Length: 347
Image (cartoon, rainbow, N blue to C red; front, side, top):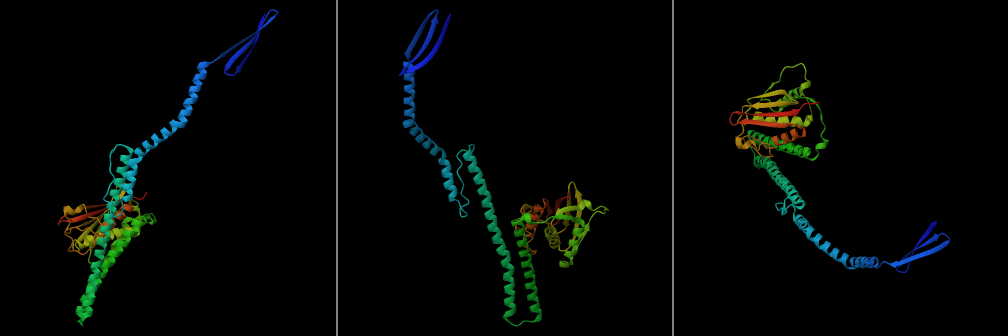
């Protein structure tokens, strides 16, 4: 009968294995030892390689990584330096776009587009302030001039009356300009604070016509509203104060530029919206000016003989934007103008 026990051991660099064999009545112990020279050499080589990598390889990799990273981020650093140099005085400067297809190029393009919008906004603001100063200064100069003339020497009652009429007209013009400017500024700064409510548009326009009659009793505004028993289709969501300003601005323009001839006002229901159209037969707007009508202080080239500031329509357009609506202007020179308010129907 054969049986055996095995034992593995290590002695110095040598490894061994022993076995006990029992053959019949005799017991034999077999011990085999050997040294794994190749394995020791490989292990020593590996250890030396690790030490070499730690002492020399890692510092080399660190230096290479630093150089590569610096070269990679250099374009970004240049763009940051260039961006920091851009201020309100040199908004015309732009970042250089080397490769418009990579991430850095896309970032530069996006930044340049933002600068385009900022520059346009700054120019618009400068123009607005300049024009506003001009529109305020003119009536003030006229008022001061008339007051100085009236107070320079004794005059007849009719002369005083003429001076007071001029002062009153210029004061009304100044008051209208300031009111429009303040309202335009108010709705531009804090749009979220504007309160909305359900408005019955046909009833509201009737009320506006009555209010307008106090200011301009010579007007000939004719309301042409369809007869209907159900007024629900004319309901909109809006702010009465702002809508009053917008609609009265258009009423006033229609009467002024048509010399108080008949102005027709139509109210129609369209798919999901209500349209209010103001139609006059006045001097109209030249084709070249139609695209710029609604820009603050921009007036048509044929309208300078009529008193105005050029703020009304820009304010009206802003109000329509706040109401998620639009204003459509159609005009033919010397034939008339049609201004349409299109406002979403109240849900």
